[in-house]
Length: 118
Image 1 (tube, one colour):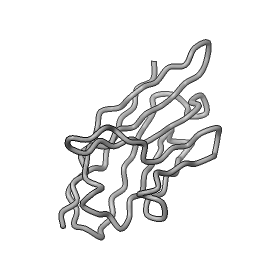
Image 2: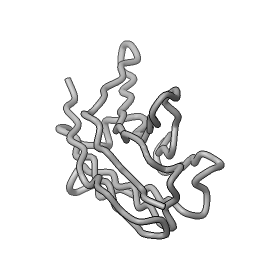
Image 3: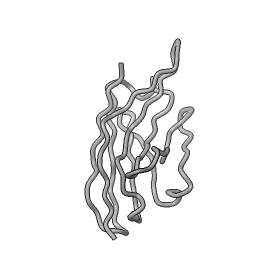
Image 4: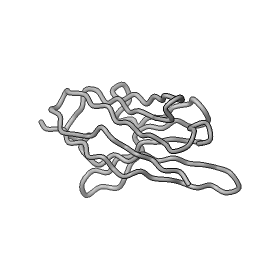
């Protein structure tokens, strides 16, 4: 069982920055992928950024050049630095971890609200 604790959301004006954190209850070396998803009101969840296959990163087109996913292995924590925020970045952000052992299991943290005002 993996527990994920996300934090760092809040209210920010357009153009501002926020940093989200996701702390895992196990070493992130045991986690195959760690991702950030977001869900805007009335929309489907979308993948925002991810660490996959070790250090490879993926980003949604809408956040490329503005968001950076990083990690601190010693703290078992993944971060999402969000810069040049836009109102369309508003939503609930969720941390997700995928562990592949005998089977593939996904874990989700509680969401953290990000609101970007015009």
